[in-house]
Length: 192
Image (cartoon, rainbow, N blue to C red; front, side, top):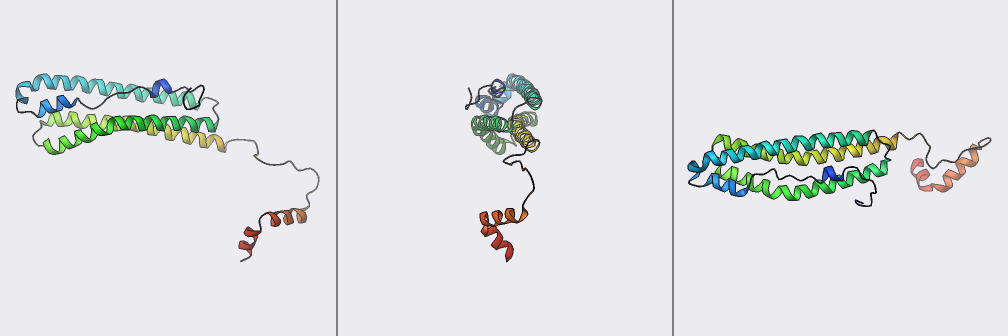
């Protein structure tokens, strides 16, 4: 049970966590004085991590799109959809807490060491930042789509909410007096 939701279809997909930022030790090694000696080995590791990060991002994007498609064709009511969106927001927040410190550290290193870095390495680091930002964007997009779907389902109900069926003739004069008695402030405001 997640946040009181019994059958919540997306917890396995949302719990996937990926660290998209390069290892700080790898960054420091690339910035060290002997980086020219280690560069081919480090670049190979960096490329491998880059491919893995890109692949994980694409897979998660597909998973969340597929998940939304299943939810969209389901019969979940608007309240349940809003609860799902809240769980997604919590997962997004948890991912952001994990990723933001590393993202900020990498940005600072790029700013301070950017001119000394090989353009290829700078490009890899920038792509890793972009993937991390995109990862968080996947959660935000899913949450917004769920809220939009919940809103659409609220508006598409065919039933009349809080209405009493009328029988017989309507006494408009009595009805008007009841309304005036219930809402005197509104009437006073309209009279001005």
